[in-house]
Image (tube, rainbow, N blue to C red):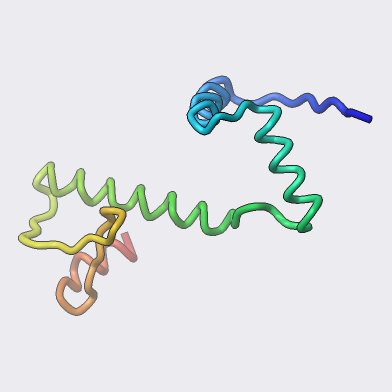
Length: 104
């Protein structure tokens, strides 16, 4: 027996998700089916919402820092980045930058 699910989402989000799914060979029906199957089978989401939010915030912080450097608002001679290109701020080497990144 099949069931129908109807919901509303932002049009831009729908278009962006459809493009990403298509690049993986999926459509909404298949993707949502996989999502619900995982929840039913394992009793949990197939991802951690906290991890997703943390990664989003890290990306935004890196973009903000890069924009401030490009605008000349932060003077940095050398910085380290991780494998994703995100900044690694050493508290001991750059206490002022670390303080700004943590406390705003």
